[in-house]
Amino acid sequence: MIAIVDYGAGNLSSVMKGLRAAGAEPRIAQSPSDLDAATGVVIPGVGHFDATQSLDDTWRAALRSAIARGRPLLGICLGMQFLFEGSDEAPGLAGLGIFEGRLFRLSGAVKVPHVGWNALGGLVRSPLLAGLDEGDAVYFTHSYAAPVSPSALARTDHGVPFASIVQRQHVCGMQFHPEKSGRVGLTLLRNWIAQCSASV
Image 1 (cartoon, helix red, strand yellow):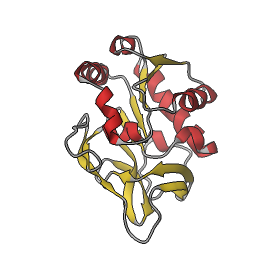
Image 2: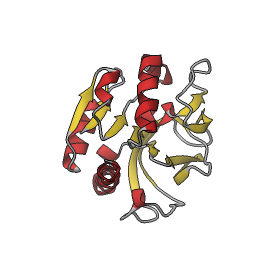
Image 3: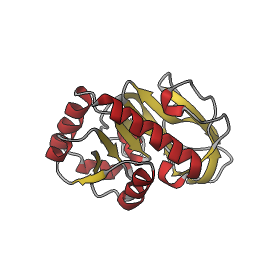
Image 4: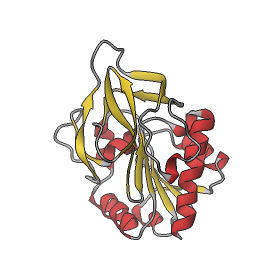
């Protein structure tokens, strides 16, 4: 069972639909104890980093416990941003700190927020990216992004380069919305679900 964390940050229905299309059996996790029986955990979310305040110490402990048990965890959009140390969007609010670094505001001669299709580049060989090709496009909607670091499996350019897929052991994040990214997004979700099955 894939647990989708409900912390009031939206896009639950589209993530559930995407996971079902990829072959999973998702359930909404409305309390930290709902993660106990999960084979994988998804943190979705859209909007301002302040929304992650709802993931209090009890939630954070449950998420860390799931990670410690070897359960794959996927952060999508704001959910990915929460996995970092923090964001310039809400300087006083700490993230979960699984990945080093802080989110920065996109800039340059581009429109912000970054909304629409854009390419994945610099792909690193990984089971998560099986079936993907350099330049495959996915759907983004965000104003803040993670720096490119050794944890990045893919990067994207919008004014500046940023990490669009990150992974550290069995924790990964996608800055875009795989559930809205057609064949490429469905492939990524299927690959991630396969990791969940292998972890049981």
